[in-house]
Length: 130
Image (cartoon, rainbow, N blue to C red; front, side, top):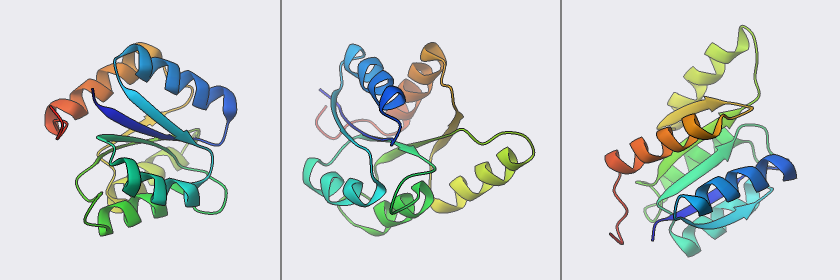
């Protein structure tokens, strides 16, 4: 069973992502704070991190950079989500790529697109437990 870590400070959105991933067969861990994500990621060794951009204490791009810099989490698939809109979306995409994100999706997520992107990431980064 693949493991996902959802890092999202909006409770409603976090609950939706958790539900979608659980229905897709993931064991899911979730936190609302960027700083809480790092020790949890080292402990549970997720196959996928769904990472919000705007988080308390440590923003998503910095969480992603630190995941990439840590040997235990350097290879995890990272899907960054954001509510950015307008012209700033392209800048956010570029920053997500520079931080090491593997994919980028806008909120509100559409369940089918979200799951399609998750499955595509798992094809590229198969779970180590598989």
